[in-house]
Every structure is written in C-alpha cells, then in structure tokens.
Image (cartoon, rainbow, N blue to C red):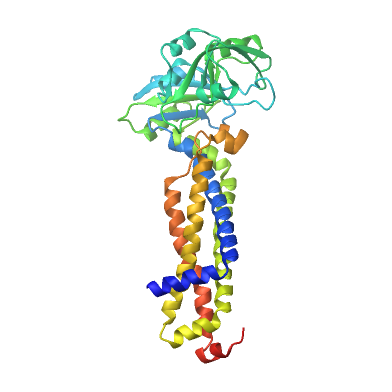
Length: 388
C-alpha cells in the first residue's frame, strides 16, 4: 500500500503546475456548487419556519383579492379556533423606488400568533396603543438606521398618498431563520385611511387562524371554507407550510434551473478530472507496462489512479471549505447585496458537507474508470515497445 501511495504522489509531483491548476479549477467549481445549493436551502427557510398550528385563509380566486372583515367573527366562532389575525399587504416605497420591503397592516392577535417575534420591554404595548405606530424588524433597523422614536413616511403604491408613521418598537427573531426585515403597522389606522381615500374599507388580505394543538388542521380548514362556500368571496384555507410552498411553486422553474446548474458543475468536475487522469495515464504507458511486468495487477494501477484523484479532490475540498467558511461568516447583505432581503438566513447546509464528500468519492471512482480501461486495452508487450 505504501508503494502505491509513493507512486501516486510521485505522479502528481511530475507535473506540479498541472496539479495546482486542476486543484484551483475544481475549487472554483465547488464554490459555485456550494453557493447555488446554499441559495436553494435559504429559499426554503420560510417553509421550515412555518408552524403547524397556524392556518392561512385567503381568497380562493387569488391572493391579491381581499376578503370581507365580517368573515373574522364567523371564523372565530368555529370550534378549535383560538385566535384570528389580520394582515394586509401594503407595498409602499421608503424614500426611493429601490427601497422596498415587506409591509403589513396587522391587528393585535397577529402578533400573538407569531411568538417568534421578540419585543423589548414594553415596546409592543407602545406600538399597539399608537394608531400610527410601527414595529420594524431588527434587520430593517440595521439596514436603514431606523430606531424607536423616529418618524418616517411611505409613499403608497396600491393605496396612494403619503402615509406618516412613528416607530414604536424594534423586534428581533427568536431563531436565526426568522426574517426580521418587516414593517408592521396597525390595521385600524390602515382601515381609517382607506375610508379617507374613498376606497372600499373593511377588506382583509389574509386571515391567520390559530388553532388548538389537539385539533385537526385539515378539518378546521374544511369548516372555514364550507362557511363561505358559494359566497361572492369564497375562501381557500391551508396550513402555513402549504401557503409558503404555494409561493415557492411560482418560482419552481428557477429552483429546478439552479439544481440543473449544480448538476452540470458536478459533471464538468468529473469530466475534467477524468480527462486529466486519462492524459496522465497515456503519458505513463511504459511505466504501467513495467509495473504490470513486475507483478502489479490492474487493480493496483486502478488504486494508484484513485489515490491521485483522491489527493486532488481532498486538497480541493480543503481549500473550498476554508474559503467558504470565510465567505459565509460575512453578513448575507455582503454576499447577496439587495437579494439578502429575501433570505433571512444564508448559511451552508450541514448536509451539503456530507453530500460534497460523498460526491467527491463518486467523482474519483468515475474519473478513474477511463484510465483503467485505456490501460487494460494495450497489451504489455505493445506498451513496452511504445516510444514517447
């Protein structure tokens, strides 16, 4: 075994520049693979953070169509329903067109249904008491330098006009995968302003329904939808995970495209490594013939090539994970720029480390098959007569 290792390392030292360039190329490809897969992992973080005891009720036709506020009381009377939250998407502009972030008009029970939003001291009560009060997430506060007590305004797009607010609370996430790039304000203030704009008041975007831990979510959802069947605004109620996945399904083509790119990267790594090993094997045709003459079996030559591939890939992996550790230690905004607002957490999936090592083993084996077959095709006597 020691002799096989010495032969493999000797081969790599014979053309050190080629070995270095190959390691560099594979490292770059692996970094691209890790980045893409981490992006996909971050894309699904909202689904993983969803709760089983929350249902989302929206308009059956489309989420952009509202529901009557009167539905709230009827939903609340259903057995196993504990709380009913209200949320309306606002869609305003802060200072400039490029400054957009999630904005919702909510009621008090909405916050009760999302205990993962952590408020400091009495800021939550201050927010709820002030009709023009705003609660913003820590990520939003950090990005724009907004703090409690600041006044700010949003330019309405869906609902025109300049809307004035006062920051009364800054909340954080109980867990790191909770997005805090959010702007929450009081639904009562929103509804009052709608009346002043001569728009239709008492309209709700979605109802967030909190149910008991012992209830059947599907059964409660069916009861809610049956209440409004054949009405002018029928509802679609689903658990929060399904609701989040419905948004992901809209971008499923993009996700599959990213997966395809990852697969192409792995395939390219395999082909490049295989080609280099095949070239190296052809350069050493006489050497392999001599080794077979003195007693080395084809399996031994296969292990020599496998060791070469393994050394190259392990070295590449060490560089890859070292560079990746530095990159992913930076804030998401430093890596993704404006895209960071869509990804509350951008980190390496631990399972990706395992899959990368398993993939390296598979690629090593596949890459060695070409040189092995090529070497076995040439008879020993013919290989010995070959002139370089």
